[in-house]
Length: 218
Ligand SMILES: O=C(O)COP(=O)(O)O
Image (cartoon, rainbow, N blue to C red):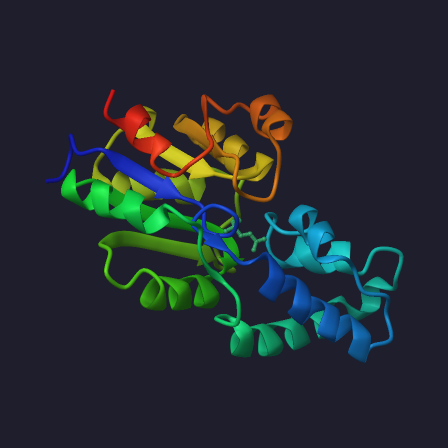
């Protein structure tokens, strides 16, 4: 029985890890191979967050949807080899996780990134931390902002949703938190701005990972 512990669910891309460049470079490589125009790395901030199907749709904007499956498959193969080229945790994330471990918090990751990639990041960049629930996007589970996966995490920890902090960097994350009845913390070091996070229900906004401690210790 772990009820009563502070419980925190983290988004992955744009929240725990700065993965933008690797995602952009890999997708641009696929587009180049198919003679489709590429995009600026910054543009990918708005392509990521809704899962791989949304990433591919955005990357293909104005081009035939017929090649969606091919682009998805090629991207997965290339990205799998490049997961660790540039991607790393944002400054202050390890310090935050060290403090959360000291406080004996329940830690989880819920991402719209394909599950296999999410697990690879947990097993490498976060292998020293006790994340007990780690979920990327899986075929059989509706993706964020559907709250089912977040609610299942709450159940597995035996903690009421309203006591759980959901931390993310996009509207999808804020909506997921609200849909699940959780406390939404929006981070300002990720892919989107304050306006988007506020408009989508952020209860708190933070500029630095360690600011999260002030919120959860209250
Ligand atoms: O891969 C995505 O689209 C998003 O991943 P995230 O949920 O970790 O931000």
